[in-house]
Image (tube, rainbow, N blue to C red; front, top):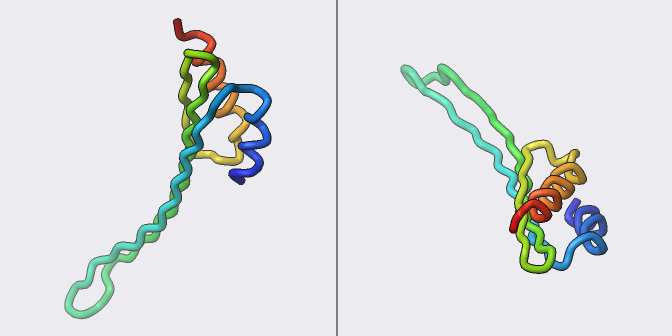
Amino acid sequence: MIDNITNYLKNKVDQYEIYYEESINDSGNINKNEIDVFTEGHSKGLGIRVALGKKIGFANTTNIDHFKECCDNAIKIAKLNN
């Protein structure tokens, strides 16, 4: 995934940073020595910071399959900055 993002950004911006986080959470309640409630959670997130000259843009998403849209949004934000 990171290689795909790097290849997408390398000719579009001067510099970039990629932040990726993935977490898995398990939690449960025990009542009278028996599991009462058990839940599992899984989340992923991606943040992209780009530099175009002295202009900086940042965008993030929790849908990493849409990383190109996230990169493009960071580029758009950088272009809008003064």
